[in-house]
Length: 309
Image (cartoon, rainbow, N blue to C red; front, side, top):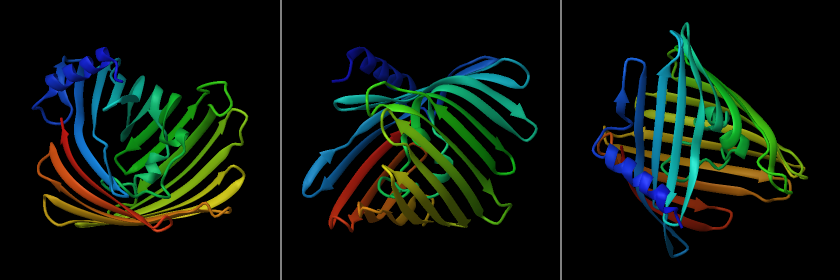
């Protein structure tokens, strides 16, 4: 069960930020600011005639303070709460430095891995999707990680992180790294990205992942594709995702996707999915999604209501 003190802190944060627009500034001086934001999301999934409540809430606290004319100190904490569990999504502190046409960050703690720079090209759906874009732990989000990111006004993003051991027992995460970069190609609507991740568990074989992605935005239509090559437990796998999104109006957006990941031992994953989201304003949205697993020949349906603050 959730620790009562932590739940009380979460409820206090909810009460403080209630009614504000995403990531409200609750404290600000000439040199510092503190923001609180998050979401409350009710979700229900029907899988094989079994309805599951997957509802959750997230609280995010972020702060920034001026150290010099070009360098700021930053800190981020984000916690997720479910009915009978909770987890820390982010907890890191570091610096943010302004550069000529952009900025760079260097942080330590529980950080995002670099591979999101690539997988965000196809990981755009409300719930399902991103079959091939499923990231290794070190490239997704991990503790004991030092991470750096650089972005500029020309559409360039470069990211890298290294994570140390989380335990000494067989099967515990030992160490790993991920690197990635993306580039917006002028005004063409195209974005390209490439990334690599490798990690090792205690007394286990290392595994590695190479991803490359391409996205294209044309007015209300978005198209994205990703290719991955992975090596897991000594076996090589290949996969891809393709996704399309269309914004029908200021409220409604629909997506459709297909992806598969195939390994030498025929331990394959393949699915098609579709969803529609109604974003009524910046804070409130509803969505419905369907996923068809063509390997297991089963179907999952999801409906959700989300309030951001």
